[in-house]
Amino acid sequence: MSLIIPPGASPRLYNQDLAPSEHRTWGFYSLFAMWMSDIHSLGGYTFAAGLFALGLGAWQVFLALVVGIIIVFFLMNLSGFAGQKTGVPYPVLARVSFGTFGANLPALLRALVAIAWYGIQTWLASRAVIIIALKIWPEAKGLTENDFLGESTLGWLAFLLMWSLQLLLLRNGMETIRRFQDWAGPAVWAVMGLLVVYILMNAGWNISLDLPGGTAVWGVGHAFFAAIALTVTYFSTLMLNFCDFSRFAPSREAVRSANLWGLPVNFIAFSVVSVVVTAGTFQLYGEHIYDPVEIVGRIDNIWALLLGAVTFAVATLGINVVANFVSPAYDLANAWPSKIDFKRGGLISAVIALVITPWNLFNSPVVVNLFLGGLGALLGPLFGIIMIDYYVLRKQHVLVRDLFREEGYYTYTRGWNHKAVISFLVSAVPAVIFGLVPVFGVLSAFSWFIGAIISATVHYFISRHDTTLAESLAAAIAAEPDRGAAAAPVSG
Image (cartoon, rainbow, N blue to C red):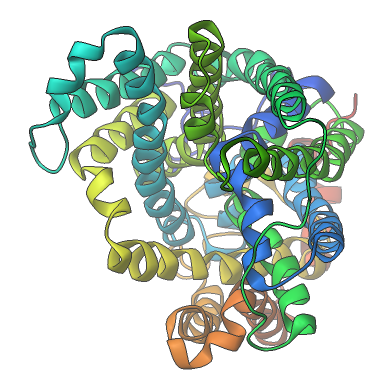
């Protein structure tokens, strides 16, 4: 790969995909559509209904969703504004706090989570393909009766189809992804609207929104706050790397407006619709069906079935691209910039997601709960460190050019900021313990907050006297206009 390195930048830290964005094409609509793609998924559909299992009633679930998504809105703005101002993706922004090479620690942890879920979401999308195939070619049922590495022949074909389709988004990098998101999210809304009308009409417009739930083991108050915490945790992956998208935004206002309409407004509306549809299935089929693919599979009209199945396949691809494809592409590029660009990082991620046979991961409670759950608990500590460092310690002053230099403000000790690593380790241990050990079940829903608060607090107190923080950076920016320009906000 031919690469032009700016003066002073190191090939070990720089390539054109990691460099500050010069093309700000992700305006309000593109970011808003990105949130639709992220939320309009099988996971997003079942999330709200799943909160009833905590032992809450309809109005309590609704209020918890409102409070939770408002918290998400404010936290997501932190990541979004940082990306919009600096123009760099998540692993490069992490260099500010962890060091130029130390940033590979938070980057590769995020990549591990993303790649595993990338494969799982691709497999889940292939379930809709199987429904379509069996409706059109009933004789294909014979292809579902064998087993190779845990999946049938038809299952493999469906998975490889969805796996290959996602690779098409690599053609022009983030610009192809933007164009895909611009129509994928709204398309799901259109079909969900039709599904709501279909369910309500056939249910005689008479449904109960109180879905069956579980028992509030530690009381309704605890269940309510747990629902809020789980809502925030649901978005914890993108709270880390939303800057991968906002770096292309023309202004801070575009980020704020897109987040407002895409998160509180869109998420609450979609959650209400999903609960309405799930409640309506009880009137129609005598049971609550939480999987929209199964609902679509019961529709007698072949064209309606095809439309619904294709839409939910597209919806799953949408969230996969947003939450699980872009991040590891950048994260792997950050590990070896001279050899891996965004496209190669995405291809490597896709190959790993194929090799790990994700259905075996998904069907193993040990893997999902311990491995993925444990990695997920580490995202809170990373968020706490990066955000407290950027907003409080450095007061948003960043010398962007030094993020790509081996000798500069972010070199620390051989490229590692040991204080950030210490803050991470100190907070990661309790976050994982509270998130995974059954005896601490009362705190498990709050593990993200626990990790984020501990890491932010520890990092602040052990770093607040560093001379390379806000004051010295501000002075350096003022003294060197060319470097300051690279760190200035992009207005639009």
